[in-house]
Length: 387
Image (cartoon, rainbow, N blue to C red; front, side, top):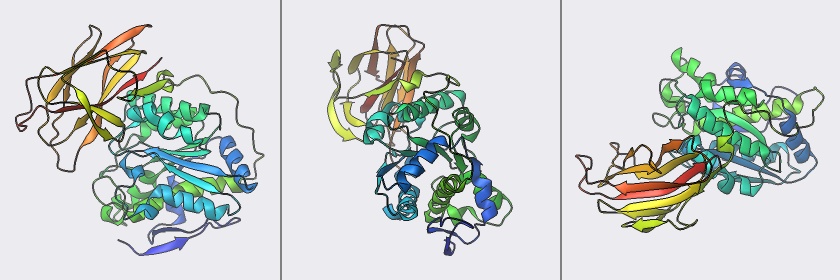
C-alpha cells in the first residue's frame, strides 16, 4: 500500500482529513468530478448542517459500499464520508446508514431502497452500482427507479452517483451518467480519477485495489475524497442557491421501478407451497428453500414487472424454472463456478404485464449442474415493480 497523507482543500473551508495515496494530486481529484449537478438539494442539506440541525448520511450499493476490500469499518468510503461530514460541520449531529449488500445491482436495489435506506429519512445519499450493473439500458432503467424513489422521499434528499471500476477500467458509467444528467445529480468517478494514472504507469492497480474490483483502504479513501470534494465545492460556490425543484421531471426511460417492492416470507403467504419451506435469514429476508425436484412455489402479485432473487454458490445446488401466468419459462441456475462465496442473483421473469393480479411460479427441476451433487434451491424474494 502506498504512503498515506492527509490532504485538505486548497481554499476557503477546510475539507477535513481524508487519507489518500501520495500519488493523488488535485488534478486527479478534479478529473474525478464528473458533474456538480444542479446543486439545489445539496445546498439545502449543507444549509441544514450549518444551522446545526441533525442530518442522516446514507449510502447504497454493492459489496464496495458494504465495505469489501477495506481493512475495517472506519476505512470504508461511506464511513469516511460520514466522518468528514462530522468534521466539516461540527455543530451538526450526523447519523450514518450503510445499505450496501454485496453482489447486488440496482435491479435489487430499486426493490429494497425503501425498506433498507429511505425508512431512515436520509438527507444525503451516495449511490454506487457502477461495477455491479451491466452497462445497459435496463440497468439504467432500474437505477432510474431507485433515483426517483430517493428524490421523491419527503426529506427531499440530495443524491450523488459514485462510479467505481473493474480491473481494466470497465463500469456502467456510460448509461448511469445518462440518468445522473437527466436528474441533475452530482457525479464522481473513481475510474476517471485513477484509471488514467494506472494506464500511464504512474500508479499500479494494487496501489488502490484489493482484488479485481474492490478498492483497498487507499481506494476507499479516494472515493471518499471525491464525494467530500464535490460537497465542499458546492459549499464554497458563490452562485445564489436555488430552491430544490418541486416534483420530478418526466422519466428518462421509465418510472416502472419507482414503484417497486420485495416480497419475501414476511409478506403475504404463497398461494402454493409444495416442497418449499421457510429457511434461513438472508440479507434480503427469510428464504424459501427446497431440496427435491418438483418442489413448487407460487406467489400472487400486481405489477408490470416481476423478477426473482435466488441464491447461487459453488455447492450442491439445483436448478429451477420460473414463469408468470402462462408466459415463457426462465431457467434459474443455483450452481456457481467461483470460489469466493455465494450471492443473491436477480433474474427478470416477465415485463410489460397488464393490470390485475398475476402469478409467479417457481419449480425445482430434476436436471442440475454436472459438478453439483444436490438439488437445493433457495428463493430470496420476488421483486415486483410497476404497481
